[in-house]
Length: 337
Ligand SMILES: Nc1ncnc2c1ncn2[C@@H]1O[C@H](COP(=O)(O)OP(=O)(O)OP(=O)(O)O)[C@@H](O)[C@H]1O
Ligand SMILES: [Mg+2]
Image 1 (spheres, helix red, strand yellow):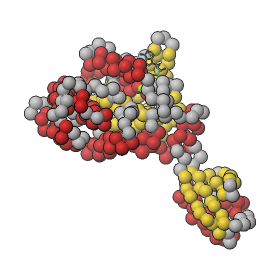
Image 2: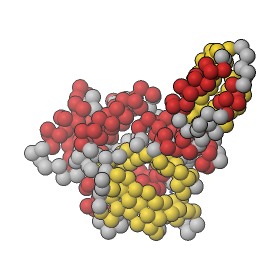
Image 3: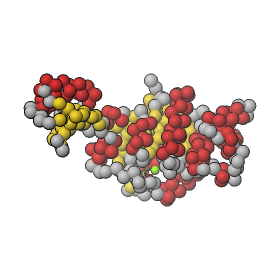
Image 4: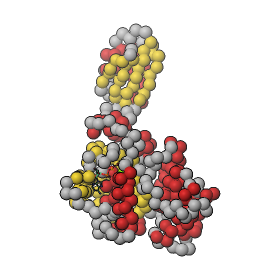
């Protein structure tokens, strides 16, 4: 497996003192969906901006699809796809016209462009509205058009900066379904940033939790959850429990047993394999059970564990943050870095 993205000691300092990204290292395998998860100001957009050659590095090193981001910014921009929260689509053009402009900008051969545009319009459920002005589009339609623009040139690596912010759950689910399908079809690598814990959990093969410019933890969603202390199996006995608590503590893999409202909360690395042992132990002691349930720890707990803070999903990126990024990108497109 080749690495699609490699970052080593990636650092960006603003105004001589703000260490927005502070020695970040990670790698993303080809075909992976890799998520950067963190609160406001954590350094997500700044990292993404450096990886896409929108913003220079203060120090460190990064390659994307084998290209050094500082040495080959122009080649890089032709090879990657980039979708951000702000609408970059031209409101006074139709969806199709926006795609035509993007195809020309990204050097899609003239002979292939119409076919590719039709394919994407169909794929992203925009075929019926392709010839309407973008200003008449709903938020979800605009997001899908942005995505179509971002992948018009079939990039090997796609970067998404909080692509579903502001979409309703249905819109978000639809968007991710498309990303997942496209990834499967083309083997494209996806790097995304998000505020949504559930989104990162469901979509990403691996996640890095970023806080104050540093990676606090990384791994697959279930690895991260395991590191928090594993699953919780809740055992609800019926009537007298006898020596059940001691028997639960003695089961292999059990790290703790807490009594809560007459139930036992049993922590262990793998709840699934523990449940049959719990049932066997209870049966052996003649204790009847009202129920046994399994809960995997959520990414909320992971975030709390590794940053010492609660995750606040309601604080979306600020308008200024967005404006800064958009300006940077437009400048970069014009070749001013
Ligand atoms: N152009 C800039 N000049 C000065 N400081 C900046 C600039 N861009 C970002 N910062 C600062 O760097 C830090 C990281 O910002 P960044 O935009 O990367 O965070 P983020 O994780 O994307 O946050 P959000 O979730 O709000 O989008 C913040 O403290 C921010 O204020
Ligand atoms: Mg951001």
